[in-house]
Image (cartoon, rainbow, N blue to C red; front, top):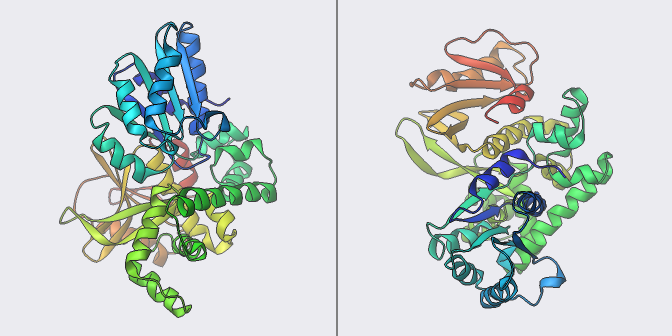
Length: 399
């Protein structure tokens, strides 16, 4: 069992602290495995610990339907057992009124609680009310490139990078097959599960085909500013009528299910958020390949997606930067440090180089600036702008 150290270390840090630990993320991203791994670590460290693990995806736990039943079951089954008590609930959002039961258990002050969930909207609303100030959220992401190397057993090189570009970072692919066809079938099944279970069923969508069409359009236009009106105009051209409000609602469902990330645009000069024309990126580029088909002309979008997800997985806040008429692909902020990043496939000629470097040159501040591409040879940094190969960036940056 792979530990995914950065997450395991964070769970260790908060073990038996007076906080509810909440692991969030898309389905099949490894939350359940992390819980099991942490349970094993706790058993080794605290042999007398009483650990109750409830998996709401298993029929074994169908009898726990409400927060009240969760509370009563835990109290009854912990009684008489040695301390410390540990409660782990996988996919807790499937328990109605779960937050009341969890809050009641937490108030006893002798239960260490861990939860996982796949829907951000459910969690954000309920965590901010019932559990405000009493929880720590730990977002779980698909594998970044160094984790992919560990899971695949491959050495860093062209073969590993090529497989990562194609298959992405969903952990389960490494237990399935090395064959692209089989991996894509598995990824397609994940996409169907996320769309069908986490969106269509949860929100009682009456037109599933429209929802899926919107998802494909959002993924197909990754890296480009996207507006609900633009989508509505596109659908109208396809003889499909859909209101702007419905489109905005559906896009929010995809973000909530963690299948896509919404990246806002920031005015760097005025230091304000621009609430129009955000960009949407697939939470995993392998899932995008499975849903849309792998297309060689999409290499630029793929690389942007990989860089964006690497930044998010390493704890950065990510935005698109706007400076007057210029736009910077990513403004990444972590621990008070901002880095401005441009992503390109190849800087093949002076014209391409000038186009990519101009926005970074225009920014009138002293934050670090980087231009990333797949070139193997780079000129020395100049004008305070660092040049770096994308593979080297995701192998080493801010891990």
